[in-house]
Image (cartoon, rainbow, N blue to C red):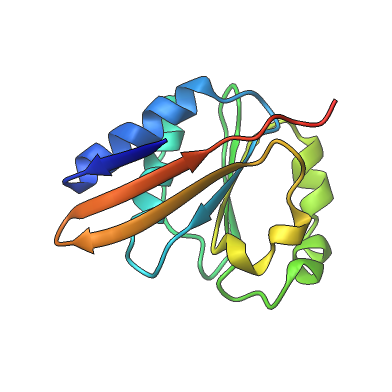
Length: 141
């Protein structure tokens, strides 16, 4: 599914729509260049999960945790080299905690994602217009 948004508020709104539909344990793989809107989309995910805390980029901390009925674990892989470093910070533990794992710069750690991962590709089409391509795959049974 591809959606066009024309401002940050619309990008956040689309993230919230997705957030309301997520089940505990879902991984969201976010792809997009610097400034594409990955963090704005994640703000929407948080809102859709009922999380009211301010969501900010975890670039320097690698992961920010936001408590809620379904917690949100917001990862930024920009500073990591590969999925091995992700496992070093306890990726398996996060997957087992039953929250939503939203991962920015996912191209660096794709091999670590479980079946059923939701992929969100955000492209800046100029100005404030974004193309959001959201793909879901069924988890292996």
